Image (cartoon, rainbow, N blue to C red; front, side, top):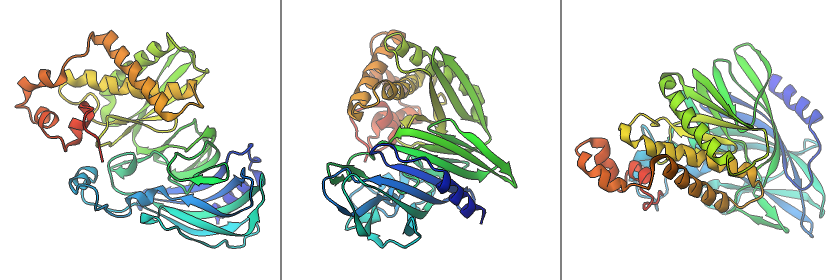
Length: 399
């Protein structure tokens, strides 16, 4: 009942849609024991095409992990899942118009039920806005990577709720990233767990063993989340950039080194560029299996391996941190640029940054061979299937 009341309150007080950007008003709760999110969302969609539209689509990202893919090497699953393969899933329990009338929906002809098609009895006229409600359940898999949970950390890079694919010039494009949207989210979880998001959070209420956060974001394609227990918070400011690192308590001794590398990368960037100020960069620990860092929406996930391996490899971890920081800063500086451009700029800056710190690039493979008797070094050098090699050598491509 409290959930329904919160939803009604949200719907009554939600802001009007902004131009042609979709808007999501979401109320969701995370149940740690089940590793599930129960939620409801009001979606505002604008038909910017020239013809009436009688069908909408929702992308259900977790259904990518619903079943094994026969085209992928089976060893991939032994690396990605800490115990055994277990499916993630997103279930839509109902779709309604704003009058409470059910709207028919069914899976589109697409593998793994990733797309859900909604039939509209009354087509949406050109340039008109349509509001509708979606109730959903998201099952988070026990999985390493950018979408899953392991131990007391859940990593949700995006897609933890159903979202609209990109719609441009009257056509759907399912291959591109989702359009930049507006988000108003109330998210509830157990009081002893911490929530980290793409944007700063505001505590709405706390009590009864739970805590509800409110977040507001504009012009983001998706909101990234991280949920953890017993996290410590370390922060540092460099001019107009604030870096906040949420580390596992057992990794307290590494927090200073991570922040030092991130801060020096930010200083290097600010010497040459002037991003809009102020900026807050969130860094959160995650159990990644084929990367040292992975960038979400204004949030950088950090592999828990950072600074824990052979000491002389720290420079390559620093390079990964720097590249992630540069990517977030370039996204802020060039918000309308294509992703491949900002990623290329981040890689270029990371190489220059590391050359400034350590001189010319060293031949990592030749340098490591004398230490190949160490198991972790042997894996990096000689096993092309293992993620450690993918992390340190760019010539291999992950599935």
